[in-house]
Length: 206
Ligand code: UDP
Ligand code: MG
Image (cartoon, rainbow, N blue to C red; front, top):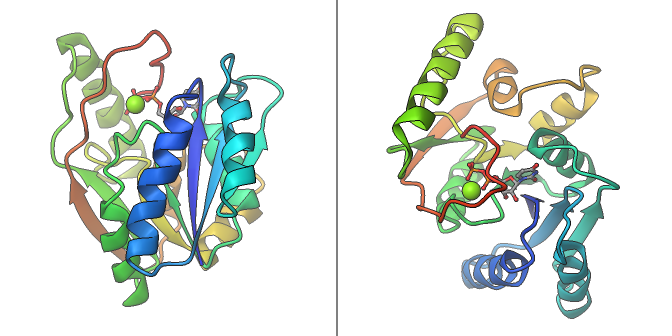
């Protein structure tokens, strides 16, 4: 089974859309799956929507945070709860194109243990955002000795890798860099990120 972990902050509108879209793609491909929404202390009806979708669709499960802890915490909570033989982490606003999951899953079937989603473009961003994120990634790349510039949180991880990450005592971590760091047999899938309308809650560097 494949688990899809979806960190969700103020995404009430996206919960049913993501459920439908992912369900269509994965069922169509004959892939058994669960959708694990992690409500990161949303202030809108995100948790209500997760509960509603979960009642209607046996594939949907949810985790609910008492307050907003940030996307990193939401992703790690998802990894801890995921039951799949492999796990994909995907933005709930579907900026990571969900149809690419199938490509990732097929590579996993061929024996790859980490499939990295690599951004071909950076979507539509302000010059300042571009400058800030370029500076940030050049710093991280220097620190880790890996080229992190095009990396993203959109990844597939084999159960072995998920168990390894869950067993790490360090909790204050950067998911994107950590999956590079742990090793394992890697493949890449290239994608173009969808442009989303700017909203006041955009706080993650991506
Ligand atoms: N998100 C989250 N907690 C937060 C902020 C964001 O779980 O505190 C989720 C959000 O719902 C989305 C993903 O993380 O699924 C990426 O966030 P966002 O779209 O705001 O970032 P960007 O598009 O700038 O990468
Ligand atoms: Mg987004």
